[in-house]
Image 1 (tube, helix red, strand yellow):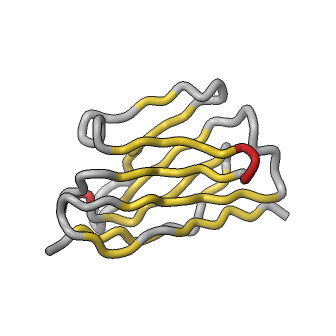
Image 2 (cartoon, rainbow, N blue to C red):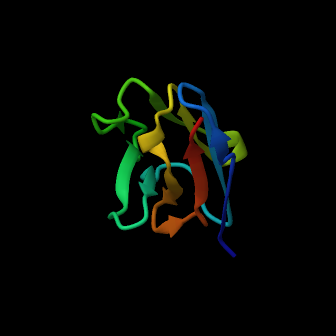
Image 3 (cartoon, rainbow, N blue to C red):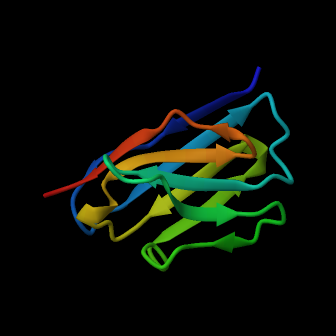
Length: 111
């Protein structure tokens, strides 16, 4: 059975960093589109970082230079390193692995 498990969310001060992890089991981890999304209450879910099947990455302007998407095939784990966090980054973050979603994690940026 396919399992997607997220970890690493929490509370951080503005300017701080967090690293989110998304570990998959029951599927072939290689050669798939993967991404991170986030959603604030009352807003649409929005793309934060994208990695295509060839591992080319793309970021929207509001996170470019601050967030980094990466993966470890040996651990079947997708990561999102978030640096220089801002209060407007506060949201529920979801990983996506070719048709499957993580459960979502709350990230709160506040002093």
